[in-house]
Image (cartoon, rainbow, N blue to C red; front, side, top):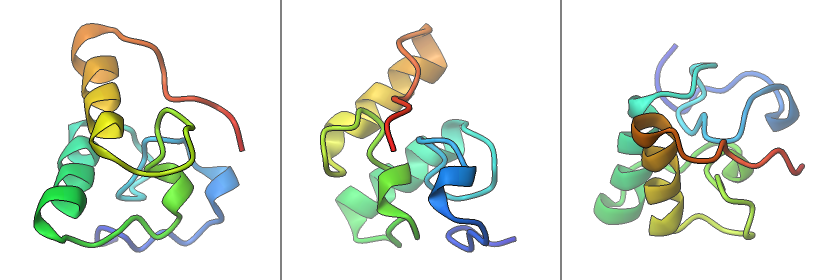
Length: 80
């Protein structure tokens, strides 16, 4: 499955899984950074990229997700 080809609704995947590969990992950090900074593909379900549940995708979501994955920071929010 290619990046962005999410075949299930967002409520079946986890926040932070921006590339819809059904795993939250560093690939998602890169995917979000590429979307925000280089005009890359947006997450198919935008709420998957809204890692901190503040209503949008911004650089703070990239930092939040990297902190979670690399430093044991708080998990992505679970709000629908």
